[in-house]
Image (tube, rainbow over the protein chains, first blue to last red):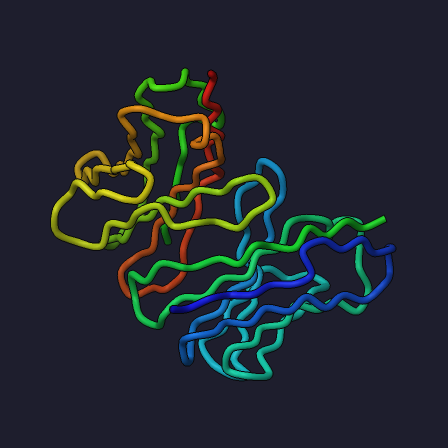
Length: 113
Length: 113
Protein backbone atom coordinates (compact mmCIF):
# COMPACT_ATOMS: atom_id res chain seq x y z
CA UNK A 1 0.00 0.00 0.00
CA UNK A 2 1.00 3.61 -0.46
CA UNK A 3 2.25 5.79 2.36
CA UNK A 4 3.29 9.42 2.61
CA UNK A 5 5.82 10.77 5.07
CA UNK A 6 6.19 14.42 5.94
CA UNK A 7 8.66 15.97 8.36
CA UNK A 8 9.26 17.64 10.68
CA UNK A 9 5.92 17.60 12.50
CA UNK A 10 6.56 20.97 14.14
CA UNK A 11 9.08 23.70 13.46
CA UNK A 12 9.78 27.06 15.08
CA UNK A 13 11.92 29.41 13.03
CA UNK A 14 13.01 33.06 13.36
CA UNK A 15 12.03 35.62 10.74
CA UNK A 16 14.57 35.71 7.93
CA UNK A 17 15.81 32.15 8.41
CA UNK A 18 15.72 29.51 5.65
CA UNK A 19 13.21 26.67 5.42
CA UNK A 20 13.20 23.13 4.09
CA UNK A 21 10.24 20.78 4.48
CA UNK A 22 10.42 17.32 2.99
CA UNK A 23 7.79 14.88 1.81
CA UNK A 24 8.26 11.37 0.43
CA UNK A 25 5.79 8.86 -0.96
CA UNK A 26 6.22 5.09 -0.93
CA UNK A 27 4.43 2.34 -2.80
CA UNK A 28 3.66 4.10 -6.06
CA UNK A 29 5.48 5.48 -9.08
CA UNK A 30 5.21 8.85 -10.80
CA UNK A 31 2.60 10.30 -8.45
CA UNK A 32 1.27 13.83 -8.70
CA UNK A 33 2.56 15.75 -5.68
CA UNK A 34 1.11 18.81 -3.97
CA UNK A 35 2.01 21.34 -1.25
CA UNK A 36 -0.82 23.13 0.57
CA UNK A 37 -0.88 25.72 3.33
CA UNK A 38 -3.72 25.78 5.80
CA UNK A 39 -4.42 28.94 7.79
CA UNK A 40 -7.08 29.05 10.49
CA UNK A 41 -10.55 29.60 9.03
CA UNK A 42 -9.26 29.89 5.47
CA UNK A 43 -9.31 26.33 4.24
CA UNK A 44 -6.53 24.87 2.12
CA UNK A 45 -4.46 26.95 -0.27
CA UNK A 46 -2.63 25.09 -3.02
CA UNK A 47 0.95 26.35 -3.21
CA UNK A 48 2.69 24.04 -5.69
CA UNK A 49 2.03 20.88 -7.63
CA UNK A 50 4.16 18.56 -9.70
CA UNK A 51 3.30 15.92 -12.28
CA UNK A 52 6.88 14.66 -12.71
CA UNK A 53 10.54 15.03 -11.76
CA UNK A 54 11.69 18.60 -12.20
CA UNK A 55 8.19 19.80 -13.17
CA UNK A 56 6.83 22.36 -10.70
CA UNK A 57 3.81 24.59 -11.09
CA UNK A 58 3.23 27.48 -8.71
CA UNK A 59 -0.24 28.61 -7.79
CA UNK A 60 0.58 31.55 -5.54
CA UNK A 61 3.48 34.00 -5.99
CA UNK A 62 5.43 34.26 -2.75
CA UNK A 63 8.82 33.72 -1.21
CA UNK A 64 8.42 29.94 -1.17
CA UNK A 65 9.71 27.50 -3.77
CA UNK A 66 9.37 23.79 -4.38
CA UNK A 67 11.54 21.14 -5.95
CA UNK A 68 11.15 17.50 -6.95
CA UNK A 69 14.64 16.02 -7.13
CA UNK A 70 13.39 12.42 -7.21
CA UNK A 71 10.18 10.76 -8.40
CA UNK A 72 8.66 10.43 -4.94
CA UNK A 73 10.31 13.32 -3.12
CA UNK A 74 8.87 16.81 -2.86
CA UNK A 75 10.61 19.65 -1.01
CA UNK A 76 9.25 23.05 0.06
CA UNK A 77 11.85 25.75 0.64
CA UNK A 78 12.36 29.37 1.46
CA UNK A 79 15.51 31.47 1.59
CA UNK A 80 14.07 33.99 4.08
CA UNK A 81 10.93 33.31 6.09
CA UNK A 82 8.34 35.99 6.76
CA UNK A 83 5.91 36.19 9.68
CA UNK A 84 3.11 35.54 7.20
CA UNK A 85 4.61 32.14 6.36
CA UNK A 86 3.33 30.72 9.64
CA UNK A 87 0.77 27.98 9.19
CA UNK A 88 0.12 24.29 8.77
CA UNK A 89 1.78 22.84 5.67
CA UNK A 90 0.40 19.71 4.08
CA UNK A 91 1.90 17.50 1.41
CA UNK A 92 -0.36 15.26 -0.69
CA UNK A 93 -0.09 12.80 -3.54
CA UNK A 94 -2.47 11.39 -6.11
CA UNK A 95 -2.38 9.07 -9.07
CA UNK A 96 -2.31 10.78 -12.44
CA UNK A 97 -5.50 11.43 -14.36
CA UNK A 98 -8.77 13.11 -13.57
CA UNK A 99 -11.02 12.24 -10.66
CA UNK A 100 -8.26 10.86 -8.45
CA UNK A 101 -8.47 11.65 -4.74
CA UNK A 102 -5.50 13.21 -3.01
CA UNK A 103 -3.90 11.54 0.00
CA UNK A 104 -2.36 13.71 2.68
CA UNK A 105 0.58 13.55 5.02
CA UNK A 106 0.32 14.45 8.70
CA UNK A 107 1.43 18.03 8.15
CA UNK A 108 4.06 20.40 9.53
CA UNK A 109 3.11 23.14 12.00
CA UNK A 110 5.41 26.08 11.20
CA UNK A 111 5.66 28.98 13.63
CA UNK A 112 7.68 32.06 12.76
CA UNK A 113 8.97 34.20 15.62
CA UNK B 1 -12.95 26.89 -12.71
CA UNK B 2 -14.72 25.32 -9.78
CA UNK B 3 -15.76 26.66 -6.40
CA UNK B 4 -17.09 25.08 -3.22
CA UNK B 5 -19.27 26.58 -0.51
CA UNK B 6 -19.67 24.94 2.84
CA UNK B 7 -22.65 26.71 4.28
CA UNK B 8 -21.94 26.13 7.96
CA UNK B 9 -18.62 26.93 9.59
CA UNK B 10 -19.60 25.20 12.84
CA UNK B 11 -22.20 22.53 13.61
CA UNK B 12 -22.87 21.39 17.20
CA UNK B 13 -24.86 18.20 17.60
CA UNK B 14 -25.68 15.90 20.49
CA UNK B 15 -24.22 12.42 20.62
CA UNK B 16 -26.32 9.78 18.82
CA UNK B 17 -28.25 12.48 16.91
CA UNK B 18 -28.17 12.64 13.10
CA UNK B 19 -26.10 15.27 11.31
CA UNK B 20 -25.94 16.81 7.86
CA UNK B 21 -23.02 18.93 6.68
CA UNK B 22 -23.87 20.97 3.63
CA UNK B 23 -21.76 21.49 0.52
CA UNK B 24 -22.62 23.30 -2.68
CA UNK B 25 -20.37 23.57 -5.69
CA UNK B 26 -20.12 25.57 -8.88
CA UNK B 27 -18.60 24.29 -12.11
CA UNK B 28 -18.97 24.72 -15.84
CA UNK B 29 -17.92 21.09 -16.48
CA UNK B 30 -18.83 17.76 -14.96
CA UNK B 31 -17.32 17.18 -11.55
CA UNK B 32 -15.85 14.71 -9.14
CA UNK B 33 -16.66 15.31 -5.48
CA UNK B 34 -14.95 14.38 -2.24
CA UNK B 35 -15.35 14.70 1.50
CA UNK B 36 -12.37 14.72 3.85
CA UNK B 37 -12.08 14.71 7.64
CA UNK B 38 -9.32 16.39 9.63
CA UNK B 39 -8.66 15.68 13.30
CA UNK B 40 -6.66 18.27 15.29
CA UNK B 41 -3.04 18.60 14.17
CA UNK B 42 -3.39 15.87 11.57
CA UNK B 43 -3.63 15.71 7.81
CA UNK B 44 -6.84 15.19 5.84
CA UNK B 45 -8.32 11.72 5.52
CA UNK B 46 -10.58 10.77 2.63
CA UNK B 47 -14.11 9.91 3.82
CA UNK B 48 -15.79 9.24 0.49
CA UNK B 49 -15.82 10.20 -3.17
CA UNK B 50 -18.30 10.56 -6.00
CA UNK B 51 -16.93 9.84 -9.46
CA UNK B 52 -19.98 8.61 -11.39
CA UNK B 53 -22.89 6.19 -11.14
CA UNK B 54 -25.10 5.96 -8.07
CA UNK B 55 -25.71 9.36 -6.53
CA UNK B 56 -25.66 7.94 -2.99
CA UNK B 57 -22.12 7.28 -1.90
CA UNK B 58 -21.14 5.43 1.26
CA UNK B 59 -17.85 6.09 2.99
CA UNK B 60 -15.90 5.17 6.06
CA UNK B 61 -17.02 5.65 9.68
CA UNK B 62 -20.73 5.35 8.75
CA UNK B 63 -20.85 8.53 6.65
CA UNK B 64 -22.69 8.86 3.35
CA UNK B 65 -23.25 11.67 0.86
CA UNK B 66 -25.70 12.30 -1.93
CA UNK B 67 -24.82 13.97 -5.21
CA UNK B 68 -27.61 16.23 -6.47
CA UNK B 69 -26.75 17.61 -9.88
CA UNK B 70 -29.79 19.88 -10.21
CA UNK B 71 -29.06 21.53 -6.87
CA UNK B 72 -25.27 21.33 -7.32
CA UNK B 73 -24.97 19.87 -3.84
CA UNK B 74 -23.07 17.06 -2.15
CA UNK B 75 -24.24 16.99 1.46
CA UNK B 76 -22.63 14.67 3.99
CA UNK B 77 -24.81 12.75 6.46
CA UNK B 78 -24.52 10.39 9.36
CA UNK B 79 -27.57 8.91 11.12
CA UNK B 80 -26.00 8.77 14.58
CA UNK B 81 -22.83 10.62 15.56
CA UNK B 82 -20.25 9.67 18.17
CA UNK B 83 -17.91 11.78 20.25
CA UNK B 84 -15.07 10.54 18.04
CA UNK B 85 -16.67 12.27 15.02
CA UNK B 86 -15.68 15.66 16.45
CA UNK B 87 -13.41 17.06 13.73
CA UNK B 88 -13.33 19.45 10.79
CA UNK B 89 -14.86 18.29 7.52
CA UNK B 90 -13.89 19.54 4.08
CA UNK B 91 -15.78 19.22 0.83
CA UNK B 92 -13.71 19.29 -2.37
CA UNK B 93 -14.41 19.32 -6.10
CA UNK B 94 -12.38 18.47 -9.16
CA UNK B 95 -13.52 19.28 -12.67
CA UNK B 96 -13.43 16.98 -15.66
CA UNK B 97 -10.00 17.03 -17.27
CA UNK B 98 -8.33 18.29 -14.08
CA UNK B 99 -6.41 16.61 -11.28
CA UNK B 100 -6.52 19.59 -8.95
CA UNK B 101 -8.93 19.84 -6.04
CA UNK B 102 -10.75 22.96 -4.89
CA UNK B 103 -11.60 22.83 -1.20
CA UNK B 104 -14.33 24.48 0.81
CA UNK B 105 -13.39 26.36 3.96
CA UNK B 106 -14.46 23.51 6.22
CA UNK B 107 -17.16 22.76 8.77
CA UNK B 108 -16.24 22.09 12.38
CA UNK B 109 -18.45 19.36 13.81
CA UNK B 110 -18.68 19.31 17.60
CA UNK B 111 -20.41 16.32 19.16
CA UNK B 112 -21.84 17.11 22.58
CA UNK B 113 -22.07 14.28 25.14
